[in-house]
Length: 312
Image (cartoon, rainbow, N blue to C red; front, side):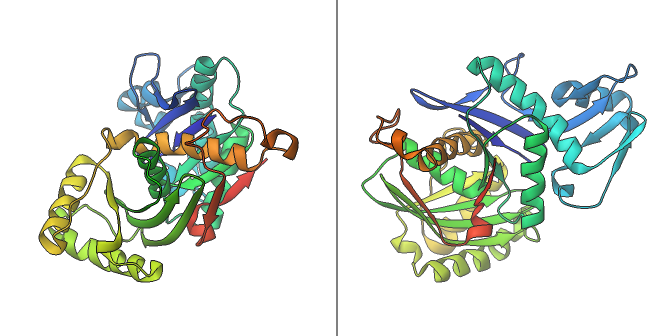
């Protein structure tokens, strides 16, 4: 099972094995794959680090950071042809799929792709289409904050836990509240969007508080009733969120050990969950590789915003 963090500037992948989710590095032991695609002078496609290096020499040879264009009518011209954002994403995902297959020894049985929580239905469908074109089968999507929560709970299991994930980066801020038990994950509320960002960290309080309060209201919870507040995003943004919560709400928070890897790890957990959910009845009684940790039920209250989209 494969989890993909389809990041805005770089992506990461994780596989779910006998010991749980683990990050897969590239051949040079880097854990991030730059979101870049290009064509060299011989017409050979380049992706990731190779594409980024080529673009430094010849910016017209490709494109970087095309995630936000998914689902739009925007096009890119390089390599003597015009590319849609979905085609660019497919070329990029093919690199991630090939790397995962080299580690697994076979194509992944299921793939979960984490996308921004603010993605609309058109953008989500474009992500699924790109994955199909890249040769990935049995694809499902999960919101980035939801993936963070799943990764956190997998490493810090409790009988029951209400988790708030605050995810802030240069382009967006998202809040997701989840109620998690060993056999049930329920998304209580989602708020935020791409119009809110951490580019001006001096204004974090204004950026964060309204979506946070709305998410709490929608979930019918108070911040004091939340067991764990988990922060995600860039390290500077996480520090700003910590300061905001401490100063304005006198609330402590937690951060994954490697916050930049949490989305990919959580996506791998989601791939494992979705496989169990969609397993044929005759196989459902078979022992699970994650018995005691695996989850059987995933309830999504805000369906589109929570990322419930399956592709076969």
